[in-house]
Image (cartoon, rainbow, N blue to C red; front, side):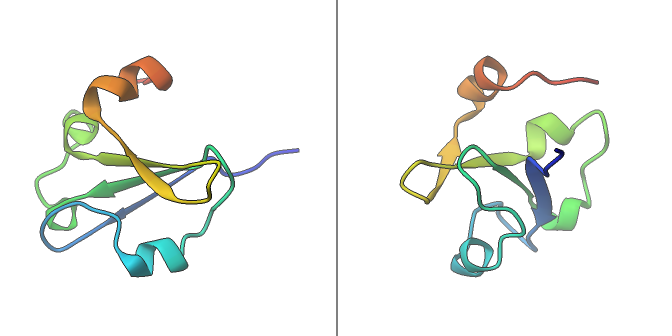
Length: 80
């Protein structure tokens, strides 16, 4: 009764959800999260992960929609 709720990947420059990310997502159920880190996470540490990650959520319309930083904390609880 377990399922993956999020995937994490990186890009060489800006963090965004590319067409390839959309097509090849490991998870794609409504409410799933896809976190993307810029610069192959070179400058990301456990302490900066939340600030660096760009968050996307699979919508009811089956599209990855960005969850803006001010909304992430309201919708998801961070455990650090």
